[in-house]
Length: 125
Image (tube, rainbow, N blue to C red):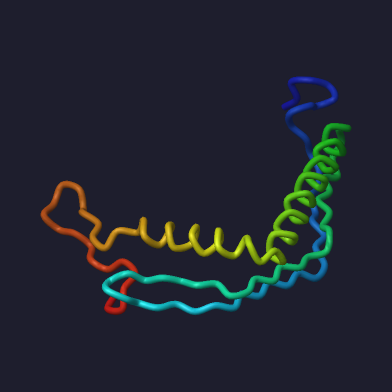
């Protein structure tokens, strides 16, 4: 059902995404010391050609959204690609990954019971 004519917030049509050639390479190691797992990234390489998202609908809004998503997505792609080739960013990537891993609990309590799940990321899962 259309609320407006032409439809602005709903559309009928097709969507397709074109993405040719993407390469992601990660070189690093991990160590387990005193109950703490640490990852160290030595090199990151991320290369991707520009992609296209295209909405083929019956309204003009689909064309505007297609162009906006393609433009915004390629800006993010360019930024990630440039950061992956910047050696100083590796320190921040390492800190971010190790912080996320440290947030994973070793024990998860099951609500309403005396039971818990034990595991987490350790040398003895």
